Structures are given as C-alpha cells and as structure tokens.
Amino acid sequence: RIPRTRGPAAARRTMTHALLPITAERGKTMVMPALRPVTTIDLLQALPDDGQRHELLDGVHAVTPSPSYAHQDLVGTLFFALRRAVEGRPDLKVLVSPADVRLGPRTLVQPDLFVLQIDPAQPPSGWHEIGIPLLAIEVLSPSTAARDRGAKRRIYQGAGVGEYWLVDPDARIVERWTPLDHRPEIVDDRLTWQQDGSVIVELPLVTLFGPDRAAAGD
Image (cartoon, rainbow, N blue to C red; front, side, top):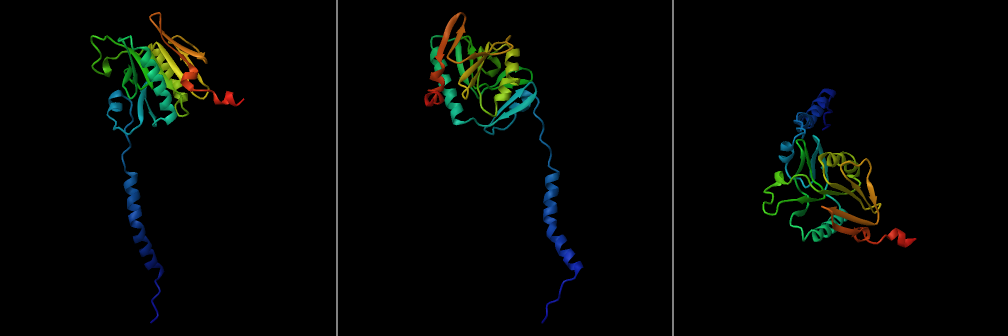
C-alpha cells in the first residue's frame, strides 16, 4: 500500500501546532515585570543576600562580585597589622566589611577595612551609631579601581573621612587622600598613620606586598 502524501495545508497545520509551545514560552518571557531600581538605603537593605557586595553611592546602586583570594589575603594582612597597632587604644576599632557605613541619606558603603573612634563605655549598638570613620581602606582590583578612585573617593572626602587609603597591589603603592586633597600622596616605602599627634601604625610596604619579584628578577 502506497502511503498518502500530505498536502501543503496539512504540513502548515503540523508546523503551526509544533511551534505553539515555543510561542507561548516567549510570551511568558516578554511579560515578566522589570526589577525595581535600587535608589534608597531601605531598598538596598531589602535585597536578598546573593554573596555580592551591594553599595549605594549617592543614589547609584553599585554591585561588586566576590573578591579574589589575593585581594582577601592583602585585606587580612592589613587588618592584623592595624588590629595589633590599636591594642592599647580601646577607643579605636578596626573592622572589615560586610558593614553598613552610612555617609549620607542616599549613601551606604562597605570599605574593605575601616577604623572607628568609639566611646568604650558606650560602644555602638548598631551600624547607625558608628559615625564617620577615621580611616577607610580599599584594596584595588580591576573591577573596582575606577569606582574606588572616582565616585567612592569623592564620597569619602565629602563625608569627612579622616584618611582614605587606596592600596594598589600591582603598583605596590598606597594612594593616601585626606578630605581637602586635590591629588593623593603616593606612599611607596613606609606607610604611617597618626591620630591625635601619635603614630598609631608604621608599616613597611614590603611587609604588606611581600618581596618585589620583578625587581629580584632584574
């Protein structure tokens, strides 16, 4: 028995039926609601924890992926150096992010490290009571360098953060900013931080960055 050949109309009916599920799926995708932009601190703090760093920079939502191992290793070295240096100063606290450092009604930042001055008899009960940091530190990475040197630097200066350090592991330097600076001090040998006329920490950068392998190779 010779099978009957389908005509053009039947073929069109078959193809239309086969495409229906795909068309319906596309329709569902097109009508998905847009995500609400994050423009306030309340909206920022309502975000679910996704393992990334979320900040609000003068109303602009900034998201930073998880840092690299080398970045966190450098943060750890700085943290322990500063923590040891303030052991005799109960009014100074060295902290790392995640944190909620409010520097304005539409600005919440998370510095890699920061130092606060507190009243030891009445320590802060929450982030809303910490005030302006004496020192804020960001370790540069390719994904954050432009923001750290630009928008965040201007925010830290405008808020009156005592000193802002940009630690550049590739150049093996620290860019030091104070609120009135138009350009940073470039530290390439020994990093010193003073408070109330006293030296709190003096850190050779070789201790921070390790031996310069490029120089050793020369």
